[in-house]
Figure 1 (tube, rainbow, N blue to C red):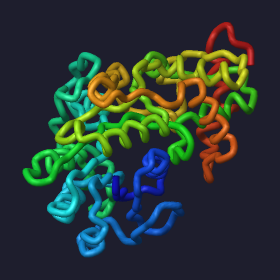
Figure 2 (cartoon, rainbow, N blue to C red):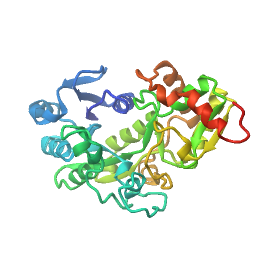
Figure 3 (cartoon, rainbow, N blue to C red):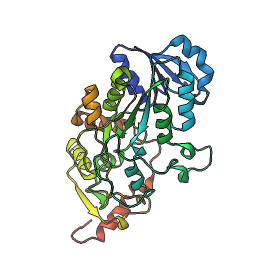
Length: 339
């Protein structure tokens, strides 16, 4: 297939391109040129998508995969540009569209949502869920709304659409370094890792980046995905404690996980979120309809992630997040711990 990928050079996008290429598809990447790709490319800004209509008409992609569609305007630009050019657009959404996720952020009532979340689970009542955190109107968080993105894409009568609600993605290239806080402590041979009591048993569906890319590649190339919405993520959802233990086994860390009251943690690590609400996505639909299965086992995914994190630590590390002296002081307040 001839496929155009918008934003195919970043964390998830580069892996999507790699999966599609490995399956023999003809890939063109539309991006700003700040990162490299070995695919054919069209250089431009996402906000100026319509300016490249002539080039897209010449390319005639059968499918367009949009990795960086964040706002209603992004979705409108996408559908208006490719209506009549492509057969289908495949758009990455997020599991933050669910009402349950709004409850984690205390933006909905305190009722706990039952798990797991199928694709028809209730969505957020608030449209712009991160606007309160935006610095100004130019901040992406101001107009970010995957809810509106989905509505535009799925309601286009002429252009087929597919939505993939991705989970917390980890692995090679993770700019958020989601496991770094634990890996560093283990590599620093800390005897203890402190874990707030509200976080110990919290579960949020995760997905290793190569597996997530495989799911997206399947959806982009299988006509059965037309006009469908899919949850993506691992079938088994671990608690935060289980993730730490999984990392510890691979690294060989023999320390202790110490669960403490959240109010004992330092201000830099405290968050005002409701972790009594799990986010567990039911991923059976994409497995059943498109025969999706992970191409990388969890054990191998953890090995690759640890190796990448060690070779690519964050450019800036906040010393407050690794204030071991402060952690030792907290432990001294607890009985039975000699630090």
